[in-house]
Amino acid sequence: MSEIRPVFSADEIASRIRALGSEIRLDAGEAEVFLLGVLKGTAMFAADLLRAIPGDVSYAFIDVVRDAADNETADAIEIDFLSFTDIRGRNVYLLKDVVGTGVIENYLLSQLRTHEPASLRLVALLDRANARTVDLSTDFRAFVVEEDGTWAGYGLEQRSRFGNLPFIGRVG
Image (tube, rainbow, N blue to C red; front, side):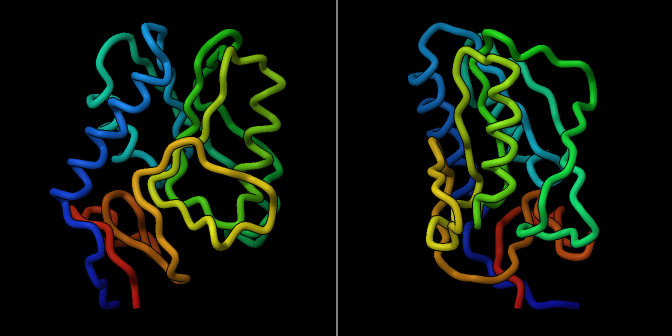
């Protein structure tokens, strides 16, 4: 079993998600908030954030099909909407588990813009801005991390394990 060093506790995560929900509501004003989570790492994040945003909120999930190398630097080749979701004219908040190089997120944002949302914001659970290889900023972030490596817990899995941990930790 890999050792996982806790970095963000369950209480820290809960507190930050509540604050993030308030920030997003303030950004959207009275308008509907539409959360669009990228599977599978955002499932817990999306569920908690959904409950933390007062007012009119809805959500959906998308999956990104990548080329043969299934990692963050691989090129995204297809976006699968798991159910038909019309985002035209909606305030869309794209949820991503870890935003590192920004390559996949940049692709997703450009593809989503073609569907003409009223606004489109990128929300990261973990933001690794120091790892960017493209010009990309997150609009909202739960936590900033500067360490390289693999993260697990709170829906983030390492080899299909550890997503059930209540904290977020660094594997190694």
